[in-house]
Length: 436
Image (cartoon, rainbow, N blue to C red):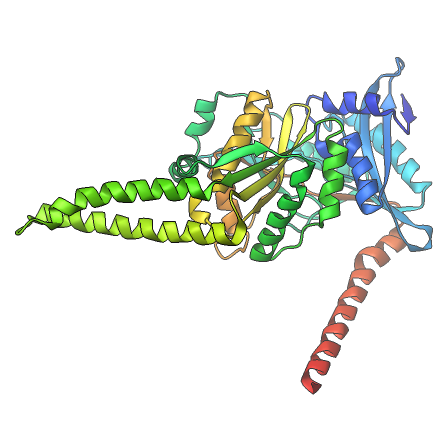
């Protein structure tokens, strides 16, 4: 077999997209283009071909240039290969190591989506067709260092996720949703939540919702130009969909007012009774509470309309599609009208959309392994779990070190130096604040 580089886009994507087990948008040709445009990384498309010049394995390698002419390489969710074909994997690793070493690589990082453990929606362990320990042992025998079974978001890509099998009927898929999830989806529908496919003109609105979500959840994502570039590059081949979920405040207010009027009509004759029975008193109390709640809703929607206009986009999600798989890459939600559950309805609509478009595997792209209720990401975990997917744990990250000394400098001393600098900066700021 021959090792090749600079693989043609069509040849590369046709192979990766149609690979039976390892098709992934992070290994797509477009992800290399995007990584170069948005982050300055250099994409390399490499592979092995057989005697008929047909690809038998391939990988996107992203090169990050470092000072002094060094680099490191990262194959996101790579390689695109049968990891259980030991001879093929051995040959490919050998060639890739030679290739990156010539470019003064310190190390090569991989994080293949090899399933290590899997549990269904009832938390029962799913038997795996093959033993992932075989892959783990073979990679370490080839010189890879495993970076540990992390539990949160410490790695380049999440070690845990939820996956929904969309090859089943929508009825079967929905049957695994939690009861509250189905109720909230229906609540959004009853309020007229409209979910549509967005275009480039909606990127700013999506970015705004992401900023609100970041502030609320205390994390930092990306800026507007990042999302614009992502949309531009991925929609050359229709790999990315932007779902926009909105509520028309006027429609909701009118519906609530109509309901209130009907309740007042029912309440009036009960209030005119001289000696209402116990059941009538109970009914009057229930009607009064509902009317009061409707008044609160009407005020809430009027204030939201006055502040944000009408209709209001409450939820916006980015779905990446590649081959027969889809990933929920980003989800931004507004701070207002949360009782509309527009985020649930939006989620449901893109699950249904993917199902209608013959997507077989729907990945919610990231959750936690540390299921302590105090974990700040625990709420995110519960939200995704309620949609009934399988809870999946991957093998994790592996580094293939090609320069031990510089690897030590890069992974141990540089982080220590950065930590010291951060602490000094904090102290200086504290001193200035104390003197002011």
